[in-house]
Length: 256
Image (cartoon, rainbow, N blue to C red; front, side, top):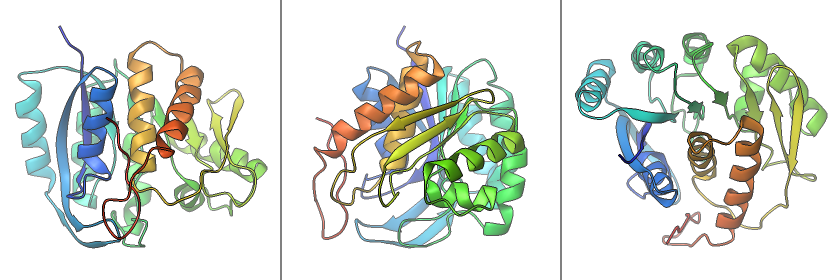
């Protein structure tokens, strides 16, 4: 039987991020991709103009209906959309502690729009504590969670340490927006692991979604956490070089 991966995230009509991109990545690795929508956005390659959260009840209805029929081998969580979805997500995660769960904490769009209320971040982190395999914040998200300004790898290490203490799970801080040395920093609770890579010119939408969904795929394929992080970094870097500009704004991934 084919393995099924599940994305719990938002709907981006440009297909540059969210459930549509996650499912495309899952299929690229040979998995059947399924998705549960947390919110629907009005957006294009340039900006998000509106967000409509679908709400806790409908989120759970989607989930309960889906798992009566299929059993996911891994879960990726992206944009939650609103504070009302936090208890529903916690309930879902608690039922799948035996499989890898990767969370990409999408708090704000690249154009600056909040995709989860800022004052709900603490509640969000408390409800995923101890229930996931990995959190993958970017520099801005890691700064918000840790309270640190992140401009170089040493500060990223301290941020990752603080985040792990807070969520009782490994954390990889993505350094794609560093000005000079580009490196991702993983802290697994015992050791730090650094993944340096070249800075790719251009501005590609959905990099965090692409990275986290490919990382989940590697975990489900049997890679260790450190191996999956390294492989996902390499895969994302290769894909960045093939991104295309479909609209008037940021580039998007092209997988075929």
